[in-house]
Amino acid sequence: MTVAVPNHVDLAVPGGPVGSTWLRLSRPSLPGGPLPIVLYVHDGTRSAADARIRRMATRLMTGLPLAVVAVDYSLSPGARYPVALEEAHAALEWAAADSADLGLDGRRIAVVADPGVAGLATRLVVTALDRGEPSLRSPTPTPAAAPRASAPGSPRRSTRCPTMPPPWRLVPLGFAAIVIDMLGGYRHLYRSMIERERHCGAVGAAISGYLVLSADAYHRGQWDEAADLARRGLNLAATHGYQLLECHLRVHLAFIAGARGKADVARALSEQVTRWAAPRGLGSTLTLAYYARALAAIGQGRFEDAYVQATRMNPGTFEPGVISSWTVMDVVESAMRSGHAEEARAYVKAAEEAGIADVSPRRSLSSLGAAALCAPDDRAAELFTAALEVPDGERWPFEYARIQLLHGELRRRTRYTAVARLHLRAALDTFERLGARPWAERAAGELRAAGVAEAAPSDDRAAALTVQEWRIATLAAGGLTNKEIGQQLYLSHRTVSGHLHRIFPKLGITSRAALRDALGAPNPADPRRVA
Figure: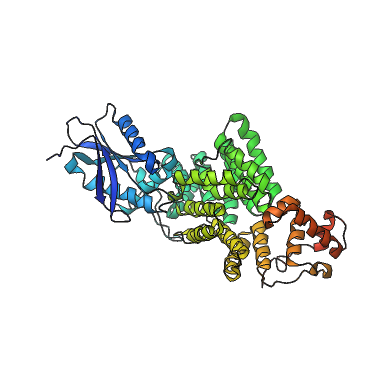
């Protein structure tokens, strides 16, 4: 028997991280048969959620016989990943299995979301497909191509579709999977698609496959593989005239070049992209190019330059978007270290309100790291620790090692030297494996400052430098200004200048231009490697 309910009612349903989840059910007061359900994932804060839900429910129900179920999910920073995902999944399970008594049809469910939490909604559907609860139906085999969470190194084929999905389904699902970090065990589908399509089929799909796999390899820390895939896709795109895909593949090569300290290469690649994309008004493509430049600048310690590129990614505002959701820590670090603390805190707040940390473990990792950069030392230590405890965080080695580096820097400054050394050693090992030279040098410098012994420079005059003088001289030899060195080492530019005046006589030189030769060529087996 159908139970009459008012237009809006709050319900507590079983399931979720704490055993029950609160929902807002909205339905028209008109009588009728079982109503289809729209599950609405909103991005409103506690204070704004009620009004937002009412507006959306009114809009969706205008002229349509349906019910709207909204999740009163816990938003960051009050709850961390995957709390919101599990609450939304509990709502979906209830709607599918237990909503009939309220006159709802659990066989007909659609999921809609505000733009800021589109990733969370996508991940919700993929999680439901993966778990098989509730049993989602579709008249097409589209769900078979949905990426499914899987343990690293254990790819498996879907049991829901015995045949290879067509490329027009695989390509958009692949890009969605990259956005929410869930390509997982479905890489083999994209490798098969490339082999099938690159010679005589849908060449554009093959190029897109290279792009998806390259992006996934980059985020997983397989940079050599990522670069190889990007170059293969780039050659194919150039041959067949797919200029937009060519630009995105160049951008990924620029990411790798910037992270490995090849700033000139990163800039050249990004400039090729902006020359083509700017006249066409391709904002997302330009944003990726600006990010490549920002990443290279951060690696060099040029935080003011990085901040300039960050503001170009978000002109006039620090509201996070689809692409900038995975650049939160880069934007905040460049802002904090270039004297734009207020803007950095505003960006962190906007990211928290948008629920970026709920999209995936990697987004949670970088969001917590960004929040730590803006926090007082005691709170920052807690946030860095929380970031390093994010489930599966180590699957994203570059971001994870950067958190370890930042945590180690903080611990050294606050005189927790033993703890600092542990984090800095781990970060250095990862950076060296990745070939992330600028970050490896920064971690090695922090280890020296933390008192870790290392092989002395080969030149006797350079050996006379203190640890602090050696770090300043090395940064100056790399082309950084006194202000940029100060931003890295938390010194004033006048203090840096004073150190350089003492360094020059010790090295027997009279100018910055002679620093590189006086210090000797960097040797990976000597000055950068700790004992």
